Length: 121
Image (cartoon, rainbow, N blue to C red; front, top):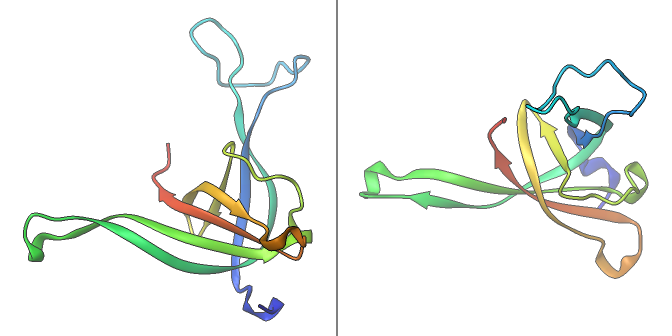
């Protein structure tokens, strides 16, 4: 793979716990405790590939694509931090839940991130 294939602008987001000193959180649970808030932690270009989807079907004409999976690939140095299930990807106003990652051969050259499209919460 070469760097020129990375044509899709993506953002990496995660849930961040508010500082104990910070009084500025707006979201609190019923007990008054501060809730984690979404925060953008990185943005860069990646390669995006369609991997497959699931069908909800009754009749062939009524088939609906219910879940699609995508693979995003980028140079390892763009975001060398571990990707966890607390992270998600935003691309073209769509949210992608991270399923798993692959660093082929542990070479730290290209990171492959397998995702599924998810509705915003």
